[in-house]
Amino acid sequence: MTTAKIIDGKAFAAKVRARVAGHVARLKEEHGITPGLAVVLVGEDPASQVYVRNKGKQTAEAGMASFEHKLDAETPEADLMALIARLNADPAVHGILVQLPLPGHLDADLVINAIDPAKDVDGFHISNVGLLGTGQKAMVPCTPLGCLMMLRDHHGALSGMEAVVVGRSNIVGKPMAQLLLGDSCTVTIAHSRTRDLAEVCRRADILVAAVGRPEMIPGDWVKPGATVIDVGINRVERDGKTKLVGDVDFDSAVAVAGAITPVPGGVGPMTIACLLANTVTACCRAHGLAEPEGLTA
Ligand code: GUN
Image (cartoon, protein in one colour):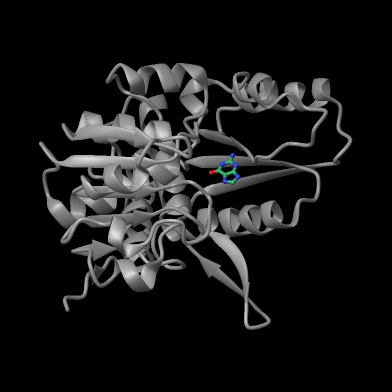
């Protein structure tokens, strides 16, 4: 029995953060510019609070300015829109992230599309979605960007490879498919309604799982030697304990795949690392400076 190479996302994310920090230091030294990231959190969703705390910490560790705006869960839409307008106009802010999900009375599409696309470090604004879809220079969503970096690092060129993305969300599945297409893969987007999903998955040289269903993809859906990128982060109860598992059944898949990302410690740590990378990219573009190499799509 073979065992897949485990792709260490924690170590890779640390390398990306170090590269970002180096670029931030150069921006300060040579141009007197400090990249700044503003994070907006509305309400008290516990998972969001954890994300936002980690983002603030890692932003500061990379030498960037971190601006946190915590708003009451009942904040009127007009107040949130006014804050975004202020951040759009603030030259010290190069990246703006509005933490999702937003409370139900707020229209997430309206809010996201109010962000200056040049500062949209999440890559969720319709302008960035359109730019990515047409192969133009965009801000690229952080999680798919992290997956792409890991795939390029493992394979070198991805050209001609058969890629299957399971999941069609705007945050992961769709942009992931666009990025793989941009690297000349043959791309299939599969989802919960796909007929004979097992058969479709077995075609994949690159299998990206982003469906949000614990251990849905077993090892016998994986082509021998394939690279498996597991984006899922699902909390399950096992033997009276809470455990984090991916969308792939790791134990059976690791025996078949050529390489696989574990959960935790795979894709997860790459998301914030890519957020920092996007903030540096946005800062360089805002000042007409050369972009950091290897940190963009
Ligand atoms: N909530 C969970 N993940 C994300 C993310 O990557 N960006 C934003 N804005 N909200 C999130």
